[in-house]
Every structure is written in structure tokens, then in C-alpha cells.
Amino acid sequence: MKEVELCTCTEVHPEAVAQARKGELPVPQLLSMSELFKILGDPTRLRIVNALAKDAELCVCDLSRALDMTQSAISHQLSLLRRARLVQYRKEGKVVYYRLDDDHVERLVSIAAQHVAEQRSDVL
Image (tube, rainbow, N blue to C red):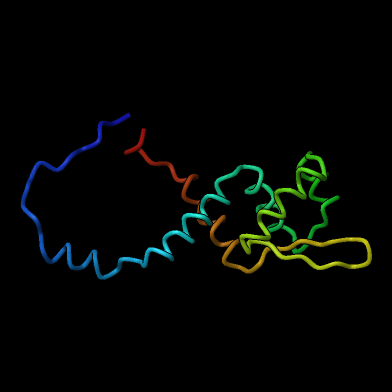
């Protein structure tokens, strides 16, 4: 692994600082984003989101079978994803179908997958 390069200069670049501050996000928005990434930081929840991205809707039984997990474990993770507004559901008789809340969720996961799949020589 390469050693991290540290800046040894003490000169501040006012224009660069001003530009960086211009794009600064409000603290409440940063906290919400942090919570979103925490929820998506769990491999099981990512597997569920990925499965839902591949199929429009799945019930707990189907997710359980597809991911080789208990229905109880799937239901628990779905409730967390639902509270985070990452999935939504609809009930049809006794069956509850889950789907991604919107295309942003699918894009977030897709971009993350692309990012980790990149071969980066500077990291090795």
C-alpha cells in the first residue's frame, strides 16, 4: 500500500477556500446523508436493495429464497430500509410486495458498484 502524501506548505489559497465553502452542504443535510450511507453500509441491506433493483417487486418469501436468509431476517432489514425511505411496499391480499422507493436508490447502489469495480493502481 502506498504511503499517503501530506502537504508541507503552510500557505493558504483564499480562492480555493472560498470555492470549497461555496459548495458546503448544511449540517442537517449532511447528517441525513450520513444516516443514508449508514443504512446502505450493511451487506445484507445492500443485497436486498440489489435484488430489488434487478426485479421490480419481490415479496419477503421471494427475497428470503433468493438471498438464502430467513423471512424474519429479511423482514427486519426491510423495516429499516422502509424507515429510511429506501423501499416501499404494497399489500395484495396476504402478500406484501417490496420495491425500491425511487430510481435514486438504484443509481446510488449502481454507482457504488461501478466505483468498487474500478481497478485503481494508486491504491494497490
